[in-house]
Image 1: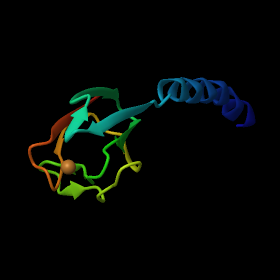
Image 2: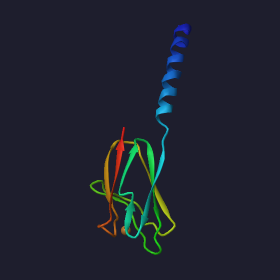
Image 3: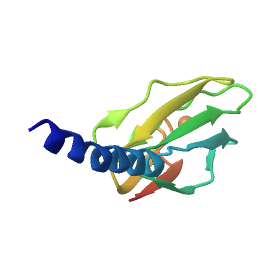
Image 4: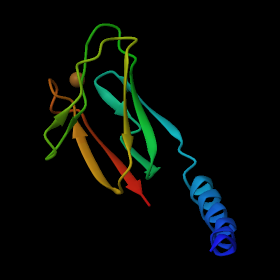
Length: 109
Ligand SMILES: [Cu+2]
């Protein structure tokens, strides 16, 4: 019994180490300036985090995910808002108060 349990342990440790190595999440930034997101299209890996930074002089913006009923708070010049993307998919978004401001985060496995 005891030796069997110990025998499984190294395999578990290896699997855990592999999972951790694959989960090295990265941080990405999207700048908001002159009523535009930059970059407009951002590709990230599942588990990464994206931070939108308001680099305007005066105006506040939000990040509203189209078809997902999810919107950030409005954030003002100098402020930022972050969201993690644990699941792969295409996340199209716009600014809440300025619908002409469009962007997309493409999350790959
Ligand atoms: Cu806006």
